[in-house]
Image 1 (spheres, rainbow, N blue to C red):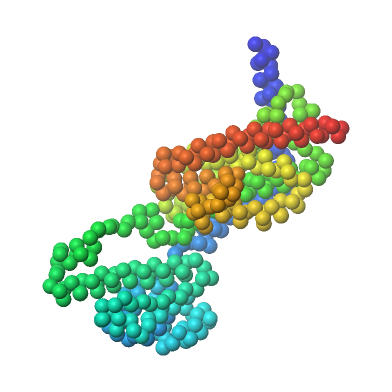
Image 2 (tube, rainbow, N blue to C red):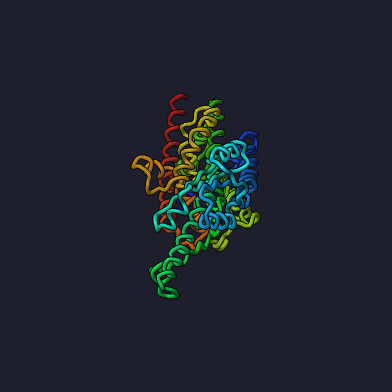
Length: 399
């Protein structure tokens, strides 16, 4: 029993020594401190400041009305009344509108053909065309929302007029026009703000990338100098790689709990982003996600031989990791290869969990993501311990 207690005591002392040593390495490496302090503290503020409100109001567009009838004029008035767009120019030709777009005076064009009113008066289907500036998604979104909403409203108005001419009014006409009534309610993002999609993803992506690139930079520096954290095994009295991984991990854990609370709780509150969950629920998610990204970083940083390698990975891996979160493309539409690859990154589940928790307000809604991150944490802890063991054996053979 005394021998067991003695072993546990040595194990704890060794882990504490590794923890203190890792903190010293971090603090004395200017590059790592720059990554942690600048990227971890400034980027969350920068992203929220740049995207701000997350919507574009009264986007200037031009209309080319070749019809000039009552229906086309009413359609133009209703589009101009929407929050999304403003009819800034009335052009006589599409070429004139194209010139305005080339000069960046407008970001969209609505083309109403000459037979628009004629077809509607003849009870035929009429069409119109829209063109959007695709330099940013927000312009396309505004043009699509404004024109489609007004188009649906126009269809209802025209149907109401047709049924009134046939002698049907009131509830009879309403049931024919809209047999299945629906109530559109965007509870968590009524303005369809781009910030709600992007910033939530960016907050957790920053944590993962800062942790990976910071720890990998430090690991690459040690290997360039012919040293390694795995060499600590020869200098300490205990046994087992778990103490090395946990000791090092605790040093990063203290740093990234602060960065996580700052980026995921304080910054959204500072910019008035909707957060429907309680603070302790968000804290649980942060604690789990930070553990996941630490062991993930330890595992993959074992392949970093030089400090400069991190810069190459920064350019190559970050866009892939962002794509695999499902931010730009639904995960249900991923090919099998990319869906499998997405399971490698903690942000695949972390970003989704963060967004869902902010919107739904309870941990039950993110139960699948919590289970996935817990499994990832266990797997990466084992892999990082194995990587440390292999590296330690390699240094022993060299010596």
